[in-house]
Length: 350
Image 1 (cartoon, rainbow, N blue to C red):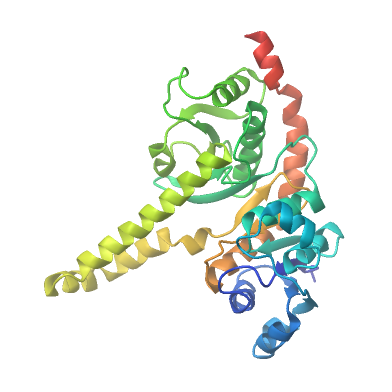
Image 2 (tube, rainbow, N blue to C red; image 1 turned 135 degrees about the vertical axis):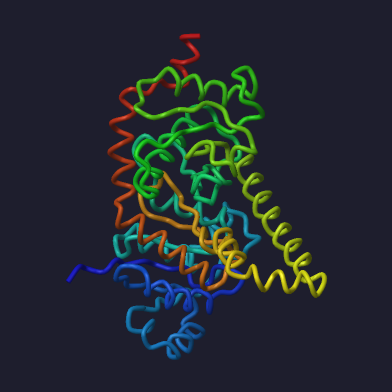
C-alpha cells in the first residue's frame, strides 16, 4: 500500500476555525490520496470535535498549541512572539521533516514570514510568491504574486515567471504555457522600470518559455495568457477586485431572478444552467493559494472560507506534493536559469 502523505494543519487559523478545519478534513479525504494529519491547536477544543467524527479521528493526531496568531498581528511581531502558536508549530513540522506540507487559513503576512524563516527559499529564488489559479473564458490561469511582495524588481518578476510556468505545466497540465506581465498597457514603452526590464530580460534570454509580453487587467478574465506575473501590491488588488466583482454580479443576478413571479419561474427553468454557472465561479473551488519558491509546501486558505473551501486547500497541498512541484521548480529553475539574463546584465546591454 502506498505510504500516506502527512499534512500539518493550523487548526486555529480562519474565522470559522477550528470546526471548519476538522470538517474540511472529512471532506478532503473523500477525494484526495491517503493522508495523515497533524492538527495543531487547543486540544481542549479539538478533542471533542474529533470525537464526533471517528473517520477523521483515525487519521488525525492532535498536537497542543497554547497560542494563536491573530488576524491583525504584524508579521515581525508574530515571528518573534509566536513560537508556540498553532501556525508556527504546524510550519515547524514541515521544517523538521515530520510533515510533507502545511495548510493554514490564518494571517497571510505572519504565515509567509514564518514559512520563509523556517523553510527558507529554493536555490535561485530571492523571494517566495503567492500564487493561485482561477477560472477564465479559456479555462484556468495562474497569477502571482498576490500579496507577498509589495515591491518587486525585474529579477523578482522574472523568477515569478519561471515559477509560474513550472506550476502551469506540472499542476494545470499545460504543455507550453504562455507568460504575460501585467501592465497598464500592451505597448513596450508603458509601465515602470521593473516591468519594462523584466520584459526585456525574458525576451532576450534563452529561456524555453513562451513569453507573450504585456497584458492588461481585462486580459486576466479573458485568459489571454496562462500565467499572469505581477508584483504583490498590484496582484492583491486585482484579486480582491475580481472577487468583489464576482460577488456583486452574483447578488445582482439573484436579485433579478427573484424580482417577480415570471422571473422566479424563469429561474426555476434555468436552474440546471444556473447551477453549472455557480459551480464554475464558486470561489471555494479555487481556494488554496500556494507559496511558490519555499523549500517546502505551504498553502494559504482564505480566512473566511468554509469547510468545503478548506478541503480544497488540503487537496491543493496534496496535489503539489504528489506532483513533486518543488522538485520540478528546483530542477527546472536550475536548468532554465543557465540561459537567464540578469537584470544587471540587461541594463548593461542597453
